[in-house]
Image (cartoon, rainbow, N blue to C red; front, side, top):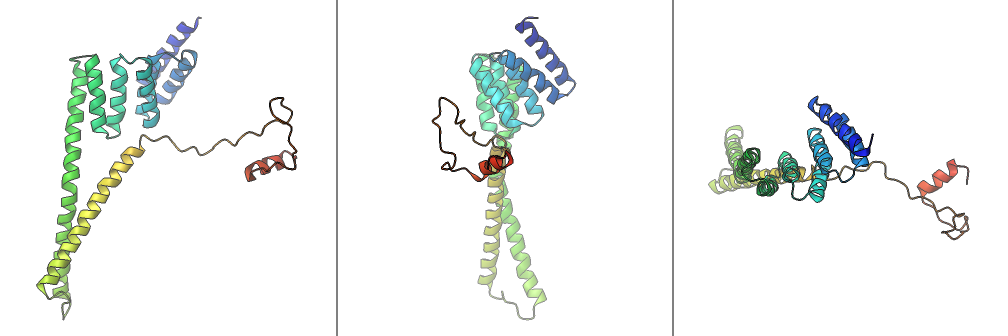
Length: 241
């Protein structure tokens, strides 16, 4: 079997696994095909979608970008990128990517429908940015009024008897509510940005020691060489110290 036929077979296996919702297995088939044919943009596109279904957003985005690099005149690459951006709540970026796809494939109903959906979600998100802080301020006003009423009912000598103090307390609590609500929206935005960041490498590779017998490296005095703690432990385990 030649390479092209093997790659096609792997792609079909991946597609079958994808239809059966075995996304991890589909990724394995697509990855095997990519190793055999690194320029196969359709495999990157399919693997991007499989990663998206697994909510591996960073990997899905990387494959979508690679699809675009390999085939910049193919609408599906931009569509894949837009789908990742939409799924991570980057609605403005998604609209731009959908727009690129529509330029390459005009009047495509699926792209136009996706653009409409992204536009509606962006509008909702912007409305939330405007409304939620004021909602927090409203809750703060209610809490301030409750505090003033409780001070008058539950204490014999109210500490907030002066109207100016009542007003100042209510305004202060409202401002706190407004600030907390804005902070919450900022936190939400940061969480969305983190969805597209690369995963943390929990097992970083230690730097390899140069082989003193190599002709490309000068022979060093082992006693005068300084090692990191991790390297010293490794050498101790190997019986070199």
